[in-house]
Length: 435
Image (cartoon, rainbow, N blue to C red; front, side, top):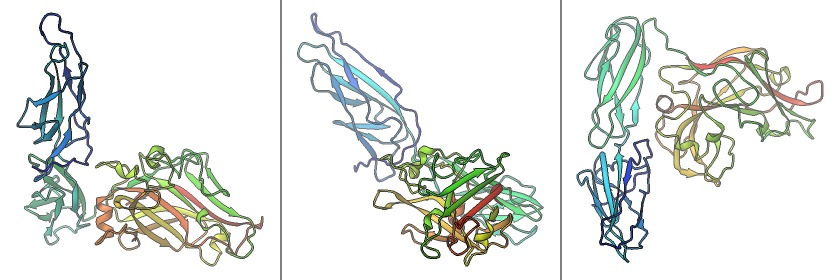
């Protein structure tokens, strides 16, 4: 049998108990102690056939004598020497024994832990989008990483019905469809929902942020790196007293020639709901300035951020300073960073690459303006991380948005303000949301 250590780390019951012993050896025998700790705690899952997960058992006895291991649950986990094979999900019990040596009595200790099943991750479940009442039947399609068969069901039978993989619309409202996989001996069961507006129904708004606490934090997450936009030495960040608006200003003194100033200063990042400062660090403790961090890529199967369902646009109210608006190129970029990483593509500092979408917007006024940026038709994949066959809509429906970055398409370098400085100023007002 081929053994393979599983790389998936999910919560499970950890070590439950250890029972020790000192034996009843012959009169005058010394009692000895046993140290027996499994090399993982809730980190091993059942292997996917034809491979089994395995790990090495380690235990020491105070006598210094050799320790042997035995499985008390051989159907669940097997022992061969010091190798523990995780055969199927369930409770595994292993006993370590020292038979007695150097005048010491025998001793044994038992450890019990739970072997969990593998999680099922959705590989694809595309939302067919808005449907008119009485439209032609819609074919549903979904798959999970287990490649096991999927069943569909309607949670809103008055609005839509499902037969097999065929969806039929019946009335105005939100049609909620589930894709279910019952699981097996290796995989846990899972259910994923999609909400499909029918007739006059509109999709629900998903807030990326609802307001601002201060220059470092929104009501839901972080603004750049807490404490300092470290890459910009001439930037200013202010928040209105009511927390409804955030203003970011990047300034530069009169350059030696027009446009000759720090391009990277005219940008800022907003991180998704629930992210904390520790999510933005790599294992070596160095801040990377974004979600391109190997630490972020290990958030697991329920990553933080905002998961798009049927929402079709990103909505933001943005104003520019008049000088920037009056410059040669006043467009601004909006980038969406997704929790989709390619761990095989690393930069020189060991940061994993995450898939990124980008839209470039032509402003219509310097004053505060509501912009609706189409997710399907205005955003394109700007960073594929060497992954092929990526589709914008599939990416958005599969992986949460964990960061939004605003930047000047070209920094203002030809219209100075009254202080003879060149400025790019973004002012965001109200919530940023998807709908």
